[in-house]
Length: 281
Image (cartoon, rainbow, N blue to C red; front, top):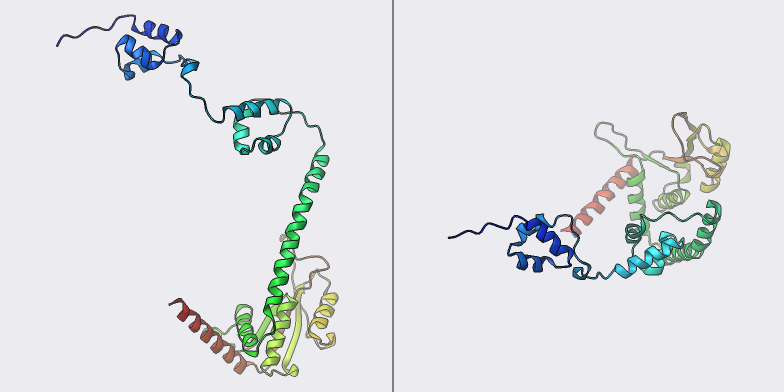
């Protein structure tokens, strides 16, 4: 088959045709070459405007640049055009940042005022949800209180270990509500007040006397009947968050002669676990 040598000035012809406004397809047909051979000849030569497809966001981009030039912020442009902030950034990032017209304090105050109605609505929704949940509980039956108390102790109380037999009931917590539920549970089981022993556990840098008075008032026991308070040593390298007047430490509750009670708790908890597993099957 006879082969034809390509014209020696083919690159110049391709560039000249491109600059006359011809499309890639038109240049291929004019020169009789394929697309792969033509591409390197047109490297660096932009396509004519009439061959470019209009994009849906071209108008948005132009408007975004116009607004940015007027000093609008990214958030303002985003709200005006209904597009993402990342798109706005991509379109206008080469433009100079507008000069700040407000101090940081003024801008913060404006932002806070804008957020206040939303925050109030959220707080009201939070309050309403908790109120509805509280009212949905109703009266607790003895069985419900018993199950709650068993689960509460198993989550927060001291437990017997195979390597350290201590079948005793020892409960520690910093939440007065938790202590109230646990005391109601003990009363349900017939545990006499005389068998209960209390003492406070708190950091040594806290107001110990105020904490003792607080917990004595919570459980309805004279502070003089509390055992010796356990003081936790303060590590100066540790940044503690549980500080201030609201920090009351933990209340430790010990039930004397509680071995049998502990066995009942452990057995009841095993029954709860067994029934829960059966529902999973």
